[in-house]
Length: 601
Image 1 (cartoon, rainbow, N blue to C red):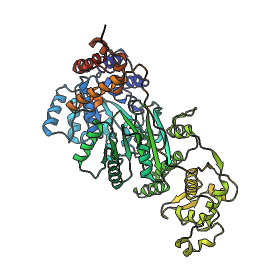
Image 2 (image 1 turned 30 degrees about the vertical axis):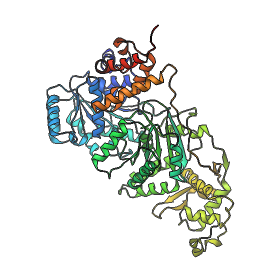
Image 3 (image 1 turned 90 degrees about the horizontal axis):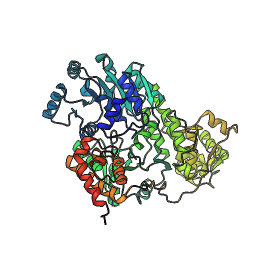
Image 4 (image 1 turned 60 degrees about the vertical axis):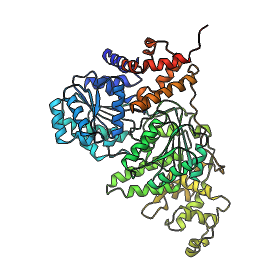
């Protein structure tokens, strides 16, 4: 592996591979079709960029978003690697010029969308050039089992037929076992190797709270986080706009992002978010794939995500620099009903619907977990963790478990006695003895269960319903507009043959959610110098029109602020400072460092 290490050091400025990278590079060079599942921030790009510079022939990288392509190309060029992206966001003249350079052998890596790659004209042109390697980035998009299926990605299954001599590799941060096998089957014909390099992101603090007064909870959470950037996910375009405006009114720099905005406005908001500090992006799931802003300090979900995969992918946008970051989700009963409806409205494929309901079940169980949240999350992806993480809300504030069988029987009796045709709000009103027109009209005030739970507040019963849904004793009948129904487990509870253990209900005071995750700098890092280095990086990036991390990632600046290199030779020994970056930026950063050094004598 001498040659890959030389490329890693001489081009990218790193002394050695991170765990997992070296084996993937070897696989690609040896010609094994390889699917790599690696957590965000683990260095996926280097796993194919290093082989691309060693192979005899160019590499085609398939990417779903123009912004992602452009950032990757900018990063490669900053390291002196000739790369290009051909897409509709560039002028025809620029695309033609780069294609000619690619044909002439001057460009080693060419980034294309799946739609452009799989046209007959492009396939014919590439067959004349004979690429050495095809890389499918964000590979989960090819699988209907995954959280972000894109039909145009399915066409990529024909690549192995069109280019039988080329190597083939695929990368994703988000894929459960079924999705991984589906990707390998489609891209490799069932062969190849699947490399799973862990899903854990230990720097992410995980928390879930019942949504009671969502806007107030959001504002409380943000109160001491004004100086950092974050993403707030909403379910609808309307709530995205309204939430962004509410934050602007409260004095925050907040921008909306959803598919209904004009493309120019979306691009403008994305560029502001990527380049400037302390910006909040309020977005639907239209925002996120390929967003590589390293210093996002939190992701807040105001609504339940679509699945565990979607949740993992969305929280993965925080803390890419390895620093402390937070993921907080607010969710309520209405979320589960709405998600079930979305699944039922999604086409006619019954197997697909069944899988999606199971995925939603897993997410609800995660929300109502009573043991370490990270253990639950990792177990979903097939990864066992023996010890509790100490960095989630359950580890930091363990819930007390109590026997709630009697209360669950009250609830389930009301469900059964009303014919399993009513939703949560009405059932809770019956149990609490509410005087509503709906109850009087139907004679539900004469039921034996009417008012038996009057001594408990409404949030207690809402919590119990959520936990019984997550525990499988109750289900929502979507076709019946969200009516609660008993499962076999629920009937066993009602008959006194099974128990229900739940989290002890504690009346909540206004809460800002989990404690703030504070990034603690190592003792040897000069914080003031780091701030000045970041300011220089920001100015250089703005002048070149690239994201800040393209100049240098935070980890490199932190090493500079610790080592304080005295000359260009020492600067070249800092991780992430390759020859091209040393030539382009070394003097400017040295000047800042030397300006911070104490005068002699």
